[in-house]
Length: 157
Image 1 (tube, rainbow, N blue to C red):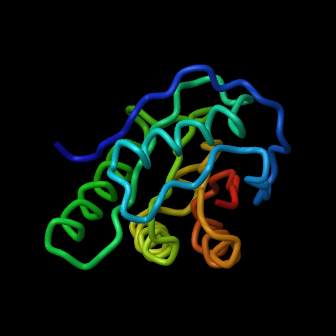
Image 2: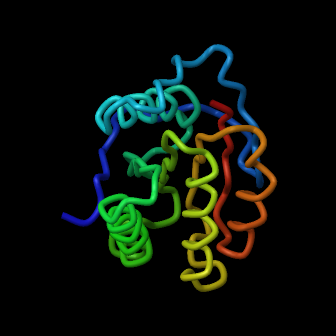
């Protein structure tokens, strides 16, 4: 199975629809421990989507990016990347949303940077990409996704 994309219901929130909208996590769900399992992280990202993605009419796809350098973690990140790259068009279309995050903010940025190199310019035009990460990674994530045309929405963990 390529990506562990969890569909999430009930996304309708009005937030600025420009480039990098920064959203504070102060009123949001508590960040799970770095050692928490994938389901816990998926639920956390889902809650962030419900809180900060209410203006998106379609159910978003959630990608939990694993940390670490194990073969399993590397394979999983590759599968997640392939899933996103090959889903644009048939599944992800303008008005859709991806939520990306995981226990290691730096690894999430490495994932996003690698993903952006595989995407054609404006391939994600009109698609909201919500990155749930540490504030220190916002500039790098914003820069990496700029050419994709995605509407970046950054949520600080």
